[in-house]
Length: 186
Image (cartoon, rainbow, N blue to C red):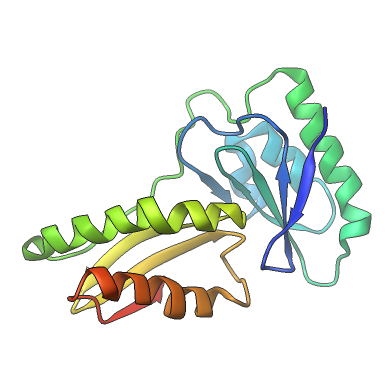
């Protein structure tokens, strides 16, 4: 088994591509070892010293390291854990675990049409591009012209995330949805 590794715009995060499907649908974000019980793979990865967060996408895994740790020391153990998991034939997620669903979207019912367009643009234009960098951005809400987004995986804590939001996503949404004035992370 060959696992590719790619850098992401976030220097604290690496993207691992096992050449197989990680999650059939959706994504899953683990921000602490306490949350890892939903996945045997996440449990193994959190045992690697220096791992701060883990994110599963369709065909990739991103691992974020703690400050002060070095990739050359961590990477072999991470690769070993991923390889061991896939070679075992066991599922990545524990039985009964579903997609890490976003909770509590908020918007006025009168904005339903605008929100539908925003969600479609995020799904078709933004999320695929962000997944290439090992992250995910999902809709959280829309209120008074402001779109609220949740940034996960490599996007969470990325130094370039502000530029991505303000110059990329905000400009895109403003172009197609005149009601959008601003985009903010949650």
